[in-house]
Image (cartoon, one colour):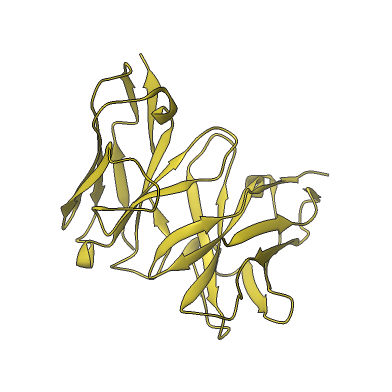
Length: 118
Length: 109
């Protein structure tokens, strides 16, 4: 059974860079035709796709965040990571990592709350 | 960019009743590539339906999906107490972006 676990600071200062890592267990991040995604959910709001990466390193980012987001993958550690630059209070959210296959997000991490505040 | 509009925003029903949730796309979703997720408070979303009508592993047959083109429906035949949650649709056929609808909350009347 594939499991995903987000990790990283729960508090980030405005204008700094948010960095999160998703550790995958129960399967290789380098196997199959999967993509590895980040989705966030602002307090009391809906789901917002941020982007995803394939094991080849190919990425796609959702347009509103393209200039600030970067997703990378480390197959040796079975991890993938999110970096979001120049954060503001509007980036306060629960951040989820998920594994997608043919567009469908079958497996999700439990999510991690990141608060942007000085 | 495809926009997914879910309605109603909130559905107030009693256990045992039937729930009908709508997801409308701003342009046709090719291949019927639409998924539905359930999210309970404090939990990650859980996949219910993919390919518009295929139930994910372990999902009760109370849940069914239908639709094509721009109009899709999630039906819960008889609401159980554990079904009261927020439901999101997601398209994955017509654009590479991860696109979700705004969600429908199914609450106890």
